[in-house]
Structure formats: structure tokens, C-alpha cells
Image 1: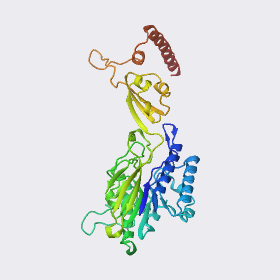
Image 2: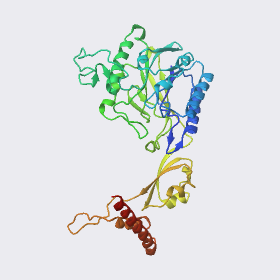
Image 3: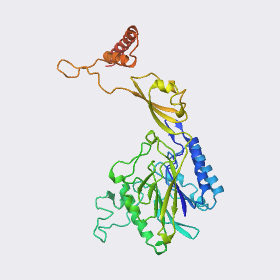
Image 4: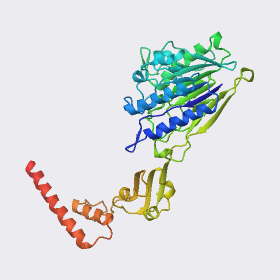
Length: 410
């Protein structure tokens, strides 16, 4: 059976004040094109459909159009969809009962995660489970194990941070979910059926990026071994494509949403589950996504940028670090003509102090006028002395006026 895994769409995302919705629409078209290339039985969207819990109307419209096109072109395709930590589960669940009749399965209530959807294709059967993002208190402990039969530690230690059975940390919530999944998978009708889980969580050992909301503390990281009973685990939340453990993958976001993701490939994941006689082998193939604008970091001299040496990056979302010493006035404005999608400029500003010390070797207290003149000399090293004198006089007058007004106010 062939499955396509994606997630972290973040529809409606604004990147450095630039709306990415048009880029995201093109990405969704690429997703439709990939579904058309092969005989996929299911599409898994592992959370964070939208970038905000109250998404803009344009983003909702884009996803609605995508689902409509999906259903018209692939009526037999099953779609499994869960909310991530950016989504509002209540809003995402709108019309879910009607959509379920159209093979679009939106699981927003964690208690519904333990009822599988069974799909068949060419004499192959797979059980699909969907676990939405688990907010604190979204699951109640069903039972407590003090120790496993082999004497190992329980999944639920005594100090697990619960309050009368209510679970709060991601690790405890995931452990409870894993225990319930194991109970379901022990059912006779599922013993020889491969199981696929779609979930939105942060696994221990996963590599994060700057575009995610990261949880602090080890209690918010989920041990991947909890989900070993599954034949494949389709994860969302971390934006880098990565294999966490055997048969456990993050597809990553299909577009780059931070400059620390620059240069990294973005993918959909094609997952093929083999027949029972081969012990349900799983093959995962990354399918490249081709964004309309790459996200790129450049480090270059200002003159080289203006001279056209980097013209090949004109269509990229750019962050440029200038190698020139000192600070240049309005570099963004000057470079936008060459790079219309320039979003960030970093300048080479020395971090050292001024080095002024008193006779005792201790740092000398700096006066505002001294700081002003030092800053002017640093910012404009070639300005004429008379120009600096004029600016210093104006600053001194303004400073004196502010001092007088402050004294009167007191």
C-alpha cells in the first residue's frame, strides 16, 4: 500500500512581513501532482495545517480549495488530518462528520485516536490511527502500572506530574496514548495487520529549527520507542525532514519557514508498506518539493552585491550578512533593487567595548556626549570634522533641554 506523508503546512504563514500564501498554494498544487503520479491509497497530514489558531480567511479558502480539488480528482483517496499545536482543534473539526463520509478523516478529540480506520488495497489491509496534538489535561490516566512483568520501570512513574489522573506533560500524555494503542493492537482482528500512526509531537533526539514552537524541558520530549508497535509513524511538529528511529519519520515542513533551514531540502514522503509474507517491509522515499522562492543566506561584500556577482539569487528570500567593516546606512533600501525578495540584512558591528579606562584600570564612566561622538565616528568614519561638530552641538543642546525638563518634572 502506498501512502503520502506531509505536515506542518502552516497555511497563512507570514515570513519577515511577507505573506507566503501564494507559495503555499503552489506547494499544494505540487502535492496534488504527486498524488496523480502514483496509486496512493492515503494522504497523511501530520498537524499544523494553519500557522495560527485563528487563520486568515484566505488561508482557510486555500485549504478548502485544495480539499475540493483532492476529492474531485481522487475520490477513493483517504485523507487523515490532525491538528497541531498551532491549530485550533475546534475550528479544524468543522464539518468533520460530513467530510468523514467523503473519506476525509479529521481527528481532533484525543479520545477518538484509539479507533482505527481500516483501509484495503489490492488484498492488503492497513489500520490507520491519528493522534492530535496533546494539550495538558487532554487525556486522563486509564490505569497505573507499578512495574512491567519483566521488572522494568513503569511507563507511569509515581512522580510523573499528574493531578488525580490528569496528565500534563507531553511525555506522560504520549505514554498514556502508547499504552492505549498497545491494548487496541492486541485485538485479534488487528494482530496481523500493519498499523500506521499519524501524530504531532516532539520526539527526544529530534532536530528542531527556528520556525517551530519548541517545548522546554525533557518532560516535553516524547521517547520514540513508545511507538515501536506501529509499522510506520508519520510525525509532524519538527520542520526538518528526519528519521527519528526505525520506521519513525518527520516529513518536515514542505517549505522553509526560517533562515536556519536555508539550503535544506524539503520533501513529501512516499511510504510503501509491503505484503504480510515479507513481514510488512516499509520503504520511505523523499519526494522533493520545488518552492517558487528558495530561502537563502548570503555572506558578501556590499560592492560585490551591487556589482551583480550574486544575481542568481535575485528570486530567493534572502538574508544577507555584509562582510564590510562598520555600519552602512539603509543597506536594505539600497540592495532591494538587485534583490526584490531581500528580507534581512546583518551588518558587521564590533561587539567590543570602547576600551576607555580610568587611572585605576577600571572602566571609565562614559558621558552621553562621548558616546554620541564615538558612535558618529564609527558610523561615518569619513565625515568632515566640521560636520561632526555641528551634530555634536545639536545633540548637546537637545541633551541639555531634556535634562532641564526632567529636573522641572521632578
